[in-house]
Length: 293
Image 1 (cartoon, rainbow, N blue to C red):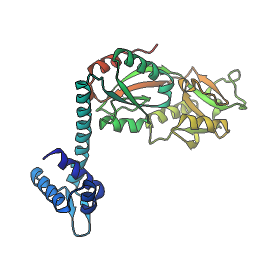
Image 2: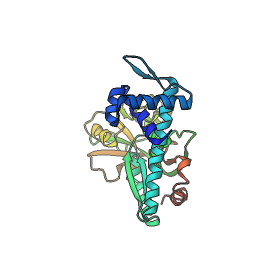
Image 3: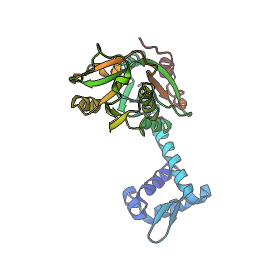
Image 4: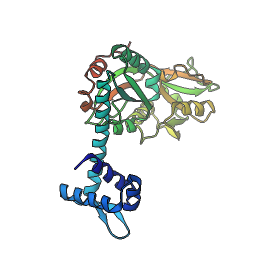
């Protein structure tokens, strides 16, 4: 079994057609068929179920392909990092983040990383909580930063900063900081929420703010984009929650009320796959000891 065989079997799993896969790989079809047969004999399992018309992954093949993808991603990272070390470079880290993280702690973290580990390159991707979990588990990210994540058991985490929530309102909304008493005043409002699928724990926390105030929120729009939420509030299409840090630097004509006297808080959290710690010991030591100002 060699690396090219593994790459070839992944391409075939995507095409599910020997002719098209062989064409993309620039090899003849009989050679590809022979490689797949040899691979199946080597591992003692049928990867593809095939007849004259169709090619399908078997259950064993489905598992095999998922694991091979992880191996190839890891090999690519190891190869790149080895090359970086050889050339005296610090390498790169892949970082996932949510909107409120970028508005608060992430710029300071990146500054400190650049100061402590000169030359390191950060590849930044704004992602929802769910996508970060998957990318971290598959080693497509090195570090993730999310708000109130439900961290899988396979990952480690650390809360780096705690924010109050704010409620966002149109500028002409009758509730103001001066006449706001408690959250039950919004019991008849229509709400804009993040989608449950992309961050269930975060959504449940927002729902609990309403439930503690004696009502269930009427959700009329869902979006995982803070800027979209701001626009919808501005247009009078509902009210929404954000960590107060999400408002840093925003110029939307909306108003907000800080919810200081509720138990729910926005926990800005760092997540990582412990398998990555040995690749970047200085980086993870720095981040584990990082404290918000």
